[in-house]
Image 1: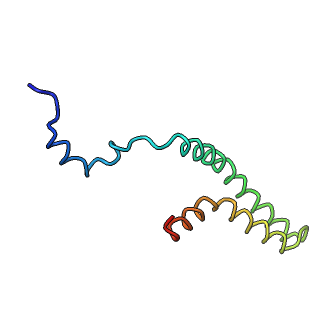
Image 2: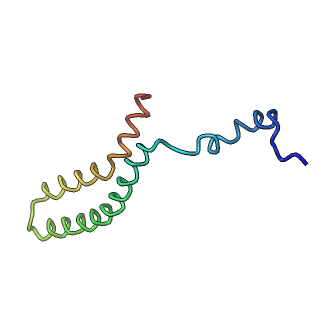
Image 3: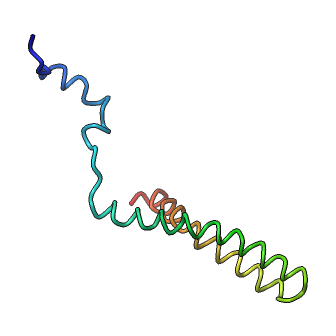
Length: 94
């Protein structure tokens, strides 16, 4: 029995296996996304606790509501930056 795949079968199966044909991403892409994912994994729970503390401080009138809202908007921008960049790339078709 021949264990090789015929060229006809390989060509016919090509559209159904893009993950197999392009299995590896570029090393630079992996080097950038992995530390970013690790960092976001640590920062998001810290940001949630920070928002709770800021809200409590603003309710207790220890800080101004303007500072609290400014910090929350800054946290949202920092945590949502990868999504915003992806959205801009998709919107501009870059």
